[in-house]
Image 1 (cartoon, rainbow, N blue to C red):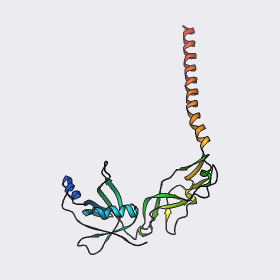
Image 2: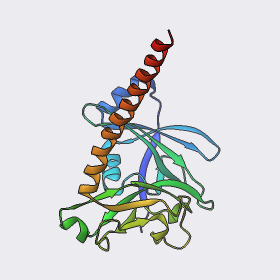
Image 3: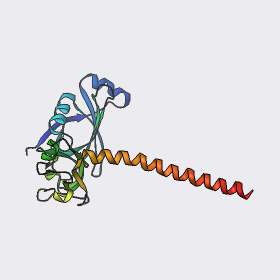
Image 4: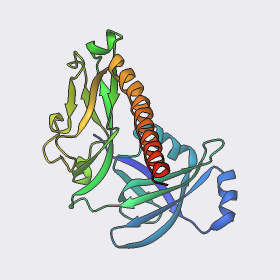
Length: 221
């Protein structure tokens, strides 16, 4: 896994004035964490978009800041986009120490085809989309892949304890937590039907109890 590099330079434009930077194809960014004072920087918008598209937001990045001799090791912490056109507005990076373990929410990707789903009487429920992982920055996986080709029938499931992680990589998630499972479609429909029926029955019982209490009160008078 090669180093991912991104060039940046010091920023002197702040606040609403950063709109002028975006018009020039420049994205404002911040670097913070690990005891440093927040750094206001900027980088080429097209290069940043390519990096996010190609590598995602969970890869270690060597940030090369203009006039600094050594790159800084960072992870993307937050991406702000325009709500209408999806364009990058601002990106926050978190500085890490390569000698210390860190934790991060890593996406879970499903691979393979489940025989149970092909029958069309079952459905696949992806219960966990992310999982918290602990590792040294250079060993942090960009994602976790889970093969679902062994899920053959309703009731089959994959738990956190079934996930095979690389050496030095651990998770803080509950080992008994279900990650993905197969559920029969008919059973789901029955559960959805049973819930309103139970609510109606409960409401009927409450109404009958109220009427009984009222009748008793009237007779007492």
